[in-house]
Length: 146
Image 1 (tube, rainbow, N blue to C red):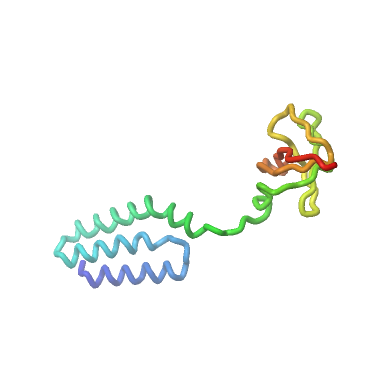
Image 2: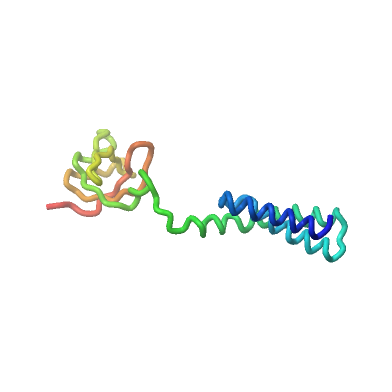
């Protein structure tokens, strides 16, 4: 293929990436750029295709996780995920063995349990939300009010 053909493919892939903004085709655009350079240097079609697919796969495997992590940095968690690490007040004694326990956070009542079945947290205690299992908050005691 000619370098111009690879540049056309590169342009199309970049336009698709700009429209979708999903980090889907940018990796293949990198492969097209390398294949374009190989074509310009006189490499055969087999070399160009191998470089295109090889570079694309390497970029996809090794750089996509880093790019996704960087792009999602600072994205505020929503719904229940936003509760992790927050504090709540126990409104019903938390006792896993008795299957009791409720906490209130943001004016909403949640069923609560502890990570350790032997632990009991009394009413009025302040707890930190460690985990969410199904519809139950897993909490640990911070301090007692009172």
